[in-house]
Amino acid sequence: MLTIRKEQMEILRQAAEKEFYKTIFQELQTQKTTNLEECNRDDGISIIRQVSNRAQTYGFESKSEIRFFFHLISIYGMDFDVTGKQPEINEILTSPYKDGSEKILDLQTLLDIEGDW
Image 1: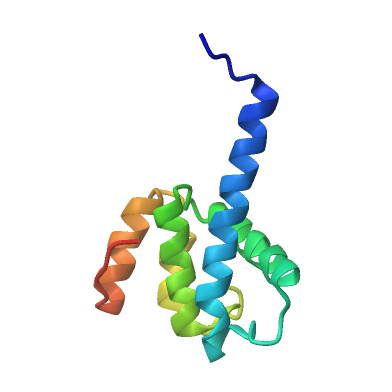
Image 2: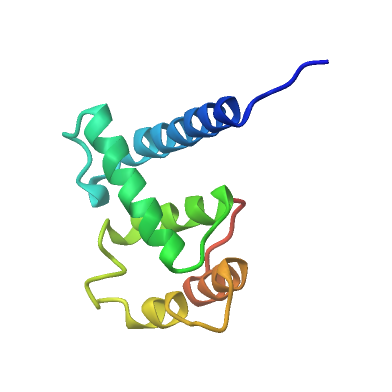
């Protein structure tokens, strides 16, 4: 029987997370709203990790929820949630009464966007 140790699982988790961040970075790097065009990969992944952590503060936990947050970034820019220029969006993001999936539904309705994240 094959046994996978906790340390091995953690290494696999970190590798999958880094691959996720790398994919997001590559997708956003081509979009002018993100200011990532000139970043090298390591710096870009670091930025994506930080923004992902920011998404988690709004209750976005799953990869699809975090991907949705990055979709909003591709539309409104890297700091759309901290500039105060999108008060309707910020109201939804900061609602303490809804989880990430409920916020996504509200944002999709507000912004009239569809898709699988």
